[in-house]
Amino acid sequence: MPRPACVLALIALLAGCGSKPGVAPDPLLEVKNPRLRPERRALAIEAAWGRVLEGAADRAAVRTDLKTLAWSPNWPVELRLKALRTVLGDTDPAGEADSRQLVRLMVPREKDPQVIDLLSQIAGDRGWTEAVPALIRSLSRPDTGTKDTERAEYRAIAKLAPERPVELTVVQTFLHPPPEEGAYGLSSVELTRADAWTVLGRLDPSRALRMSMLENNSDDPDVASIKAAVEQLRAAPRTGGEFVWLRSLRDPSNRLNGEWWREASAAVAAMGPERAPTLQLRHAEVIRWATAHRPNWARASRQELLSELRGRLAGRTTHWRTAKERLGDRSQVQSLEMVEQTISWADLLTVLVLDDAVHDPAVVTALFAQAALDRKDKSAEYGGIVEDMPMKSGEGAVRVVMFPPRPGARRGDKEFVASTDMMAQSDRSLAHYHFHVQEAQNSSFAGPSTPDLAYADRLGRNCLVLTSIGKDTMDVDYYQPGGLILDLGEIERP
Image 1 (cartoon, rainbow, N blue to C red):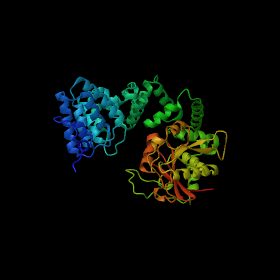
Image 2: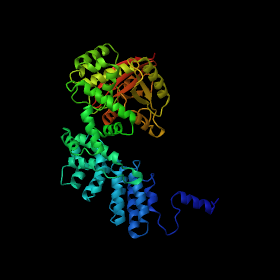
Image 3: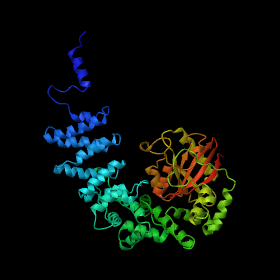
Image 4: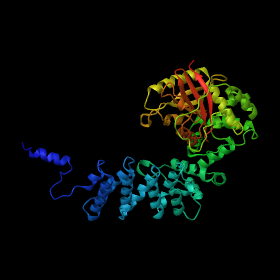
């Protein structure tokens, strides 16, 4: 029985053949069709742009569609590169202005190295100097497989500012970041400064360039904050994450942080430089807390702290991480004997303070209750902060505060994402912590993962991870920036 004409028309339309007689189908429909082979879609990109050059299609509309494809990490990278080359090859004045903005917005957020290489090369070759802050922000993301000086972003920065070394260009960008720019203020002064500071941490390992900057630009509020940290806490931020942390600590509108700074700087000054000539920002609260609650530890020598910790850890049951995962160049240090010759006075104090915390009965009870909530929630790992209880002294002078990840930051049951609430509340914390409790017996995942170690490096924080060993037992591992890990043994449900 013949099918009605309307049915045939519908079938033709669904098959992609519903265009009017004599009118070629829109190539953009093929570009957007994920069922087509990449080669055919690449040809469709050429056809779509050919229509723009012939005046048969709207330039702005086609550019928008191709930019959307280029931005999306879900498309094959060869198609993204094809779309980018097409858009960036547009010689129309309005198109070039749009391309320059595209590079500024895309470079700091892009993760694919091929796309970054293309964007960096285009910016460098065409002299788009306004892209320098975006290139610095991209360079701030670590790439363990490539030296900074060999990365496309570094080469582009050198080409765009040939009159001075790249390190000085980064310093100038830190001191004079561009005002907020781009759609919805996506590039802020704070982000640019933080990422520039991260890059300087790698390009200026001796700190000579940054120390000179502190001396010559003390009228800048952020520079003044860094200088105050060096002089009063014996610590300078090493990464952009620590720079943001210091910025918050020095916020003049935060009364509690101001009071904390006075107490912490007084505690550091009382130690004398012979005990700890240089510190990291993460040590300041540990020293302040110990001065208030464990003054004998704050006055102890390195050897005395080492002896105390050695006695505590002796005989404890520990668990090595055996899950298949490469830790890069870092060794999975989990015993005190392996690091006791090099671990600093401040790190020994830190471990002792946190070891006390995780063995406090009230804290242990809270941790097991939080772990039970984490195990039920398969959408995220849970975590929080260890902090002082200022109204108490001696035993029980700490508490743990959990911050479940927000709905938009839940990346599965094997990744912890610190919420903005947690970061805002952790200025004065002793440490960050999270759980590995997906299963009751999870010992193969005991200890920090590679992303966990990167988290400590990026934010400059003391960290703890608690792993479920049995229904009523968790293993506790301490880790810190630089990759040092110490297994503190098991804790049991009260």
